[in-house]
Structures are given as C-alpha cells and as structure tokens.
Length: 357
Image 1 (cartoon, rainbow, N blue to C red):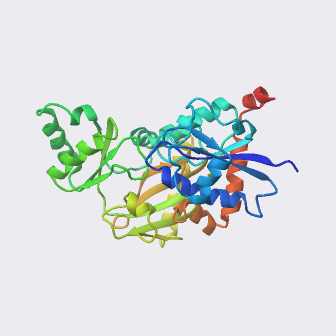
Image 2 (cartoon, rainbow, N blue to C red):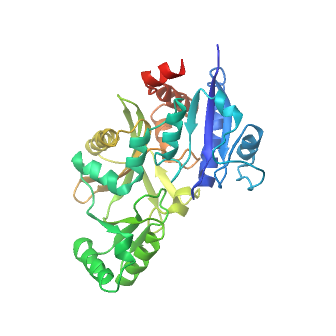
Image 3 (cartoon, helix red, strand yellow):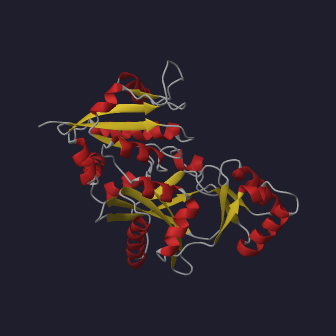
C-alpha cells in the first residue's frame, strides 16, 4: 500500500504561533500512531514567525522541542522547501491571522493539492466576526445584540468619539465586550463595565484591527459543539466550559487547569438537540468544511440559545474542546485525524484532479 505524504503545516505569522506548535505536536503523534502509520507518511512543515518555510529536519526539531525556532538561517518568502513537492494532502494547523483566515487556504488551493478544513470562503467568513454575524443573521440564527465600530470612529476628532460611546451605552448598556473584528482566540478582547473602560478598550482594540465589534454581555452558560464532515456533516455531543476568570480570555483558554470542560454538558435533552441543529446550520451558513467548533450561550433563565461564533481551525491541544468532544462521541484522536484527512481528500475538486494528472 502506497502511503500518502501528509504535510503538517504549523507555526505561522500570528500571535498564536506557540499554540499552533502544541496542536501540531498532538496531530503528529496521532499520525505516527498504529492506526495511521500504514496509511500516512508525515512531513512537518514549519512557518517561522518571519514567514520563512522550513521542512524536514528543521521542522521536526520544532515539533520535538515544542519551542519556536529562533529566526536564523536564510530563506525567501516566495521560495518553499523542495520537500513541499512531495505532499499529497496538507493538514494546516495555523491558528489566527495568516492561517485560518483564508490566506493560507488560497495558497494551498493554488498549489492544487487537497487540504484539511474549510476553503477560502468558509475560512475568511468565519474569521471575520462581523461577516460571520451577517451570515448567521441571514440563516436566522439568534445572536446577542452587537454594534459595528470602525477604527476611524475611535481615532477621530473629539466630537465623534464621545457620540460613539453614547450610542454604544444606549444600544448595548454594560457590561459589554469590545473585540477586534478579525482576530482569533480571545486576543484583544475586553469586558467593560464603565465609560472609562469602554474608551480604553475601543482604543486598544483599534490597534489590532480597523473594524471592531461591540457585543452586549449576557448571563449565560458557555457551551460548544463540534462538527465533522463536508456535505453531510455530523454534530458531536455538547460540552460546557466553566472558569473562575472574568471571561474566557486567552490565558484561561490555553492554560491547563484554569478552565474546566464538562463533557457531556449537563443540559436538558431538548436544548442539546437544539444546539446540535444550530451548529450544523452555522456550519452550512459560512460554507465550512471538514471541521469546526461552534460556540453558544445558553440563557438558562429564559431557555434561549444564542450562537456566539464558529471556529474553522479549533485548537488540538491537550485542553482543546474539539478533539475531546469527538473522543466522548466515540471517535478517538488518531481516528479523528484520519477522518479529517479523508474529508480533505474528498473536497478536492474534479478540476484540480484533472489539472494534476
């Protein structure tokens, strides 16, 4: 049996570089498991923080150490390691900008080699919080109240900015959350309760992105559902996140022990079914593929379920919800990685196949 060469693409030019390495280590271990070694040959491909691609021994060194590579050696942003030509299917595990926002997906599409996960549209639409919310609204998925804010409004003359803050207070009230429009993993997110905190958060978030989103705070339980598949996706059992911090920020998300995952979530059966159905609707609304984690708010007092967001390249770390949800649903980590690769191969278009032949 001829093995397929899996290009494990990790690292990247985002603030989640280190998280990507941790995810890649877990996927590499799964690819080297007894279940997958007869089918796949692993080629690690590491993108340095400066954008230079490294393959083979250098990338393997990063995987083994778990530490980013110091920016040494020569390279060119537009020249890729020769080993890249051997890749039969890509498994990108690049979190954040320049990784899950459609940019790398576009590059891999141009290479005419199949890859795991959503394509350009699904990735870009899901990464951009404002575009994502519009897609959810079109699909009639209930959401928290929110406002779009532009950097030009925040960094404006002294007359415009106070009026903007007045409008936010009148529309959303406190507490509310200020977020960059196109950034992943709770980076640049602030929970605000006062006018001074709102002003500071808007100024800070504007340093990350020119488009911002401000969302109303809700008293709710945070629950998540994993989706797996392409045209006929399936939803996992539902999990819940509990934590002691003020909100589910970057530190809480990626530090073991700071958040507790309740799998399965202790929810009424009807609510679980509703969340699973909404997860599949959200997956279709953004044209996602392969995998996604969909996050919700459950307002226990009213019985409402509100969709929060969809993540098309969720973490694969030891504390990540996505693989744990599928493990609890009966798909162990090595089998999950195998299925994701199969779905990536399935998504390859007939046009791409003919061009490569």
